Image (cartoon, rainbow, N blue to C red; front, side, top):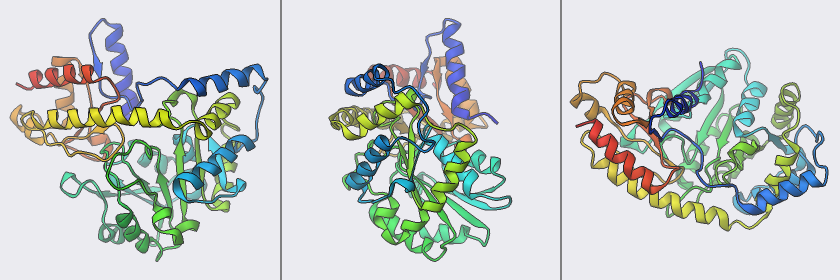
Length: 381
């Protein structure tokens, strides 16, 4: 089925075209423009004729920038043949599922999850195995729950931190404890989806699972991209570092689907990774301010319970109280009510594996957020 978030964004566009003053809190896209030094690098690349096919797995220039990024930020060392550049991190994840899974293999997915994970597994003829978590446990899977979900058929574990949709982020200690479980199962590959790595504001620094548990090096594919942290969603560049044979399989899949990522975008991505990183810090300040506002504001709405996240740009409140107060059966019913009464677009929690929740993106201005909160409150009176 189509992605739930894509469907919501399409609906918002249709309503705007019909003349309605819609505020969309559905988009997982920064509202900032791509920094100028990155755009200038792309413009110069076009002038210099970097408009041809590149190597399937990415240019040597960009791979070098990715190697330096992994060493600088994650204490990880990857050779060039351990890196794959793809058409966005979503493409990277899809390549991994297609390259690793066979019919009947199981992939463990902690819920709430990014909506595309289960369907990627199904396309690869695998079986999603969902581990449920909730607001009461910080939306994090425990070693005990992980152990209980593993079977002889388990081949993949998805681990997204900071999380879309919850904003939760695992600590180094929590990751190390999960790593101890995974070390007992060397056939399991971990897809560490770190796309929100630099949109993170917890007191403890961000840590990827293989950094926390170096012995997992040969079991982890570390996935990232430039879309979220550099406001480059439309440039479509994601990348992965991991075991040579896994990366080789992912490259083979990519060679038959898209071949290389956009040549100009690769130059821009290299400029982002190697350039001045202050642009990320400036965006992070804004995201944290918005998070502080919207979490407090949502908790002031009767029937809403919202946990403060450690990263990403989403609030994920539990809304079962509001549903009961309005006599609504599902989170989708509540989303529909708020849309029809207040022209606010949210995403129901059910497609994320979390019935009774909704996701709101705060990748928009404080002014829009304040207007949105007023409309949500009015719609639920």
